[in-house]
Length: 135
Image (cartoon, rainbow, N blue to C red; front, side, top):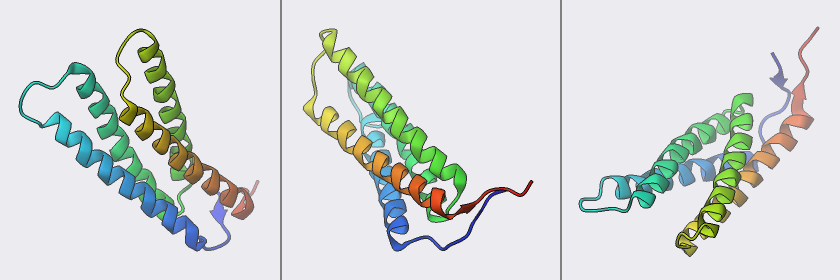
């Protein structure tokens, strides 16, 4: 198995903490929508489930990145790609006549930018600091 040669730079822990914080905020906000009494629109509940699942993935990936786990770097890339896919799906959904929520666009844009930064930074660090497995 590949092993890291160097300690993580200071910014890697900051990015991991940002990922965990994003996850905690996502879980909190999504849970509020899902557990709210009263009639919540079906579309809001769908986005809330996406936010809840993503929030858990953010926390897990953030903890893994803090520990410099290879799977967490791959997870960060997957999170960024999934967020982009949902962003595109939301755009298509709006193009079919559904209402545009500027807050959703802003939230998806920020999530995509943050996780792309985290994934790209972690990938670049790993490329320079991982030893290939012995053959």
